[in-house]
Picture: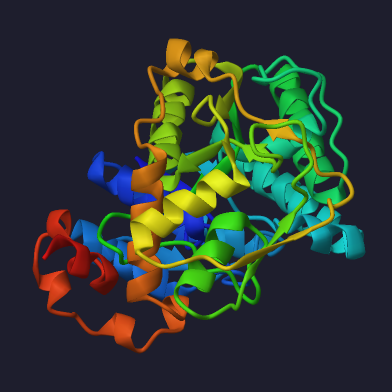
Length: 364
């Protein structure tokens, strides 16, 4: 049996492909490459030594999607595909509702037609909006504050209704917190198109010299150092969580909802300090006023995922930053980097002993 991965060339999708292949699954990837790169899938094959089929198909192309189910015996689907920038969703809400919500409806219709009823859905902690308590449990009131978050909330509700109508479905809704880091090989990582929207890729681009400085939005929150606190999770831990969720939906009917985070928060200044230590680079930053809608503290209650999936995040903040830096240093232009297509002398050695040039000076 084969697992279909929508959006499998993306940041989280590509890392999950690696973990699924390493776990012995066969996969098929669908991605329209609107915010991802075919090179990522080539590198997944390189990392794992395994091959798989990939198709440049948009989920709104129902005929094209149906053709994949005819070609392959799909048993389950992991659904990553979707637009994901909060600010862009505010300026282009119809695009987000059409792509994210209608695309998911088409996917479910094709799954139903082909009697495939196991689904792991990539949701988001944005469905919680401004939480009443932290850590945030899965049964918290959902009150998202932007169109992107509302598409995730709507899809969660649609999937619940799908199950109520047909209890043969088995669905896991995974609410991510803040994925960062990269594969230890340095071959795949986060490669945002344009200026990064998230903290860690922005910091790493400052460290590598692509951006001049980081803007810290607010230092007057009621936190340990005045800056916002978030739950950052290593993308590999997150990907392993998908494998565990897939095992769950393959063995038990129902709608299952899980937070995927570490269960603790780090402030913006703590993240800067950790990345400076990992990279050996000074991160220049300025403090600006708060952004509307930002909240002081947000981190996950992860007990349910541990109790029901046997999963918890294992990698700490230092490892997250070291892996993110390794990816950024080796691939300063992301998947466009010419240098990244050539093996360096460091890449010939075990990644266990990798150090960036700045760190070599310290070790000598």
